[in-house]
Length: 72
Image (cartoon, rainbow, N blue to C red; front, side, top):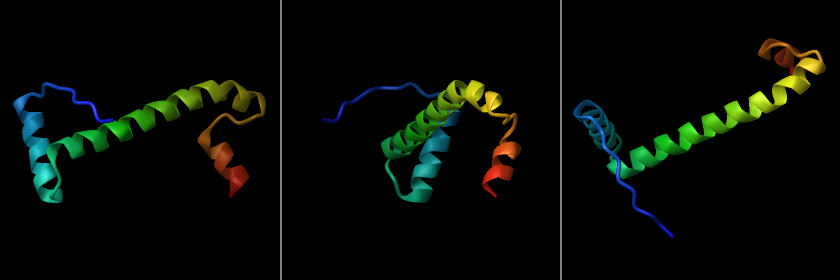
């Protein structure tokens, strides 16, 4: 089921969304949905990372480079 929500954008942001929608031949709502999906994914990943950090430190991983070295 689809739900409709309303958001308020300042004129500058609206123009940027409209310009991107036109250049990609997409509807404004699809641009906003895609941006929201990406934002939510990033926030979920940040939360997961925060939850896993104590386990990584306990295992001796203190940076992304430590992990990349292990899997490379």
